[in-house]
Structure formats: structure tokens, C-alpha cells
Image 1 (tube, rainbow, N blue to C red):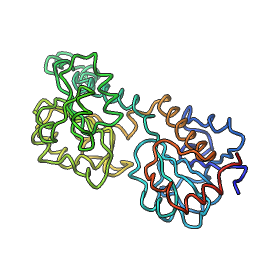
Image 2 (image 1 turned 180 degrees about the horizontal axis):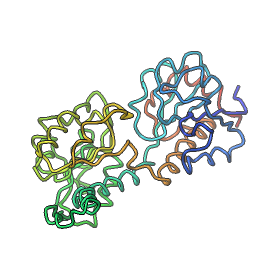
Image 3 (image 1 turned 45 degrees about the horizontal axis):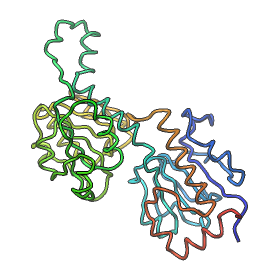
Image 4 (image 1 turned 135 degrees about the vertical axis):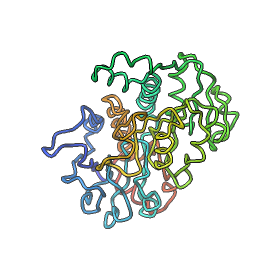
Amino acid sequence: MPTSTFHVAHTADFYDAAGKLKFRDIGTEVLASQPHIQTSLLKEHRPHLDAEQIRQANGVVVLTPQVSARTFEGNPDLLAIGRFGVGYDSVDVAACTQAEVLIYITTGAVNRSVAEATIGWMIALCHHTMTKDRLVRQLQWNERAKYMGRDLREHTFGAVGLGGIARETLRLLAPFGMNPPIAFDPFVTPAAAKQLGIELVPLPELMQRADFVSIHCPLSHQTRDLIGAAELALMKPEAFLINTARGGIVNEAALYEALKHRRIAGAAIDCFDAEPVVTPHPFAELDNVLLAPHSIAWTDELFRDIGRAVCQGMIDLSQGRQPRGAVNPEVFDRPGFKEKWARVRVNP
């Protein structure tokens, strides 16, 4: 029989050591308005989400911990993992399905903030923002003529991946007077791209033509090292590469060599092969790359929107509805999941 309470836990990394929320708003007011939802905070942050931490939970909202088969050991009433964001390379999706656990992401909630951050970085790269700041601080005013910038207009944006973030970026770029955009995405048809005013091209052609190569695809076995030495060698010397997606999609060693030897103009990197970065990174030696600790798009609005979306997913599940953003939707057809869902959802 259905229960009267649905228990949702948040991983401990949303809060500091004193139990105070690190962020202004993570959307939990959506849960607070639902009397049948019981919430809790995991007591300890661990890099891996362990089963004993979530023994009583029906759903877990996960920020950074990894999720694997051992997360589900002895948790017969765990129904769902809600990823706080759209990336899920930290989650063993096959293990979720095997354990009859849904994994869902916050589809659409990150689009605006990541798009704004991408454009902000494009402008910063074009106008040598970091270098010009340094000229003033180091009293090198008369060196400014060596760092002429350029506008976004009359240049070409190339999106590697044409999902929601890339499309929102292109929407926001429309007033800048850029050339018609190009994209590489094997999962989008030319007809669908044409409706958006975007030309689909093979990856090598995109690397050759784009003035801005912007990464907007997930990390998977197919996309790991998608951009390597051969692809970077195709780029224009005046072109920039921007990665706000995931480390591993762009080969770091190859990109370092391209930047060090000025084969491309510069890059902006928000994500790395190994995170967190706890030892000096080779990119930090270079003056033609902007770096951020996988947070360039973090804003109050972003975390609010992601939080509301992931919490609404938990409410939907608790009341017998499928949430948006299911990564393994096949689980809905599994008898074990159906039985569990019927058991843990709230009374109608």
C-alpha cells in the first residue's frame, strides 16, 4: 500500500560544516509547501554516496558525490536520484537501472545561466579583459596598443552539441551581428537545425570555420577526447575554444600545447579532467586562457532554478507522476520499479 510520507534527502555538500546553507536558494521551498514530503540533510559529505547514508530516503538530491552500485546496497525503498544539474557522468546509470532506481536531471534549468557565462567569456577573450586589467595593475599603460581586441560581429560561433544550452546561447547572441552559426551534433537532423537557422556540419569543418568553438555536449565514451590534437590543429590561429561542459571532452595535453605555442588565440576552461584541481594546473602557466573552478555559470538564479526543478521532480514521483529529465526512462517499465513506486508513493 502507498505510504503517507515521502522522504527526500539532500547531500551534505549543499551546507557548510556548521550546517548553514552555502547558497542563497536551492529551491527547497518547493518541498516545504508539500506536507507529505519529509526532508533531511545527510550528516557527512563524502566523495561517494554510500548506502548507509541514505538508508531511510525515497529520493536523494545529489550535488557532487559519485553514485554507483554500492549506493543502492540494502536500500529497497530508494526510488530516485535527482542530479542537481544536467551532467550525470558521476552517476553509474546502468547500476541505477539494475537497482530499480530512476536517475533524472534538471533539463532546461541551466540553459540561461550557462549561455550568459559562455557569452561573457567570449567577450572577455576578444577584449583581452584579463591582460588589460594586468596592464593597469602593473603600470604598463602604454602597452595597451599591443592588445587590440575584436568584436563578436562578423565572426562565426560553432557549437559542439546543439542541446538546450547551445540553443539558448545562440538566441542570446542574435543581436551581436555574428555570422550564421554552425554546429556539430550527430543526434540532430539537418532539417531540425535548419528550422533554428543553424547549419549542421561535420566536426572537422566546424573546427576549421568557427571563430569560437564552444563545447555543449555531455561527457560519454563517445565524446571523451572528442577534441584532440588533430581537431585543434584545424582551428584558425585567431580562434578561441570555450568549454563549459565537462573535462575530458577536450584533451587537456593537446589543448595546452596549442595554447602554449599560440596555435590558437586562447581558451576559457570551466571543467577539468580531474576535479577538484588541488595542485597547480599546467593551464595556470599560460596567459591566453581563462580558468574557473567548474562554477563560471553559478548564480543565485541558476541554483534557484535547478533546485526548484529537482525538487519538483521529487514531488512528481511522490504522487505517481513521471518527472522531467529521466536519464534511464526504461526503468519505468521494470516490474521491480513499478512495485516499489506503488509502495513508496503517498496516498492519493
